[in-house]
Image (cartoon, rainbow, N blue to C red; front, side, top):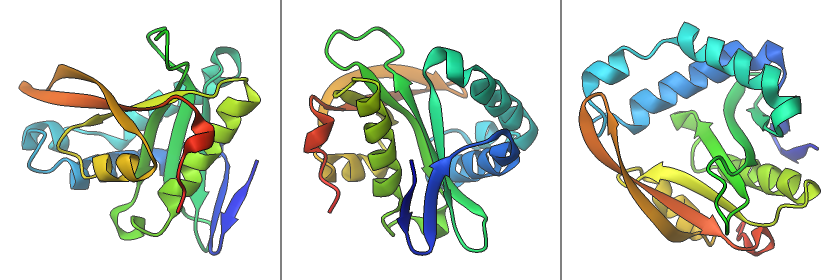
Length: 182
């Protein structure tokens, strides 16, 4: 499946994309979570460790129903990605999950996130899954993005990152057909 909004192209990720996915992942964490997550934790993020994790995720993807899309800009550089699949905890209501979505700061606010979410929701639909949730730190500006897409805050939990207790919230869609993309 490809979504295309010039000059961005959404396509399935390959192992060749892993270094770029890792870079987007680490860089986006550092810009998005500065001031929320401890500086030491952000400084210790590693492109190499992230890449190793993404190689493992993409290697397991066919067996575990997990999938990853990349947003490719001109001239072919990856500016964002999204990962999704079956909801990880066995939730009885929300069967699908948008596990990760990250877009380079310079490319945020241009519709790329909507295209990536649309791609994840469409793939879940192909798997017969029409409900989805996404977990996000409550202090993340992306909370407004998920609410604008029609997501409802459905869960909350505390987690610890770098020794700091933080609150994570889940936004859910009972029917991904109700996602608002405009």
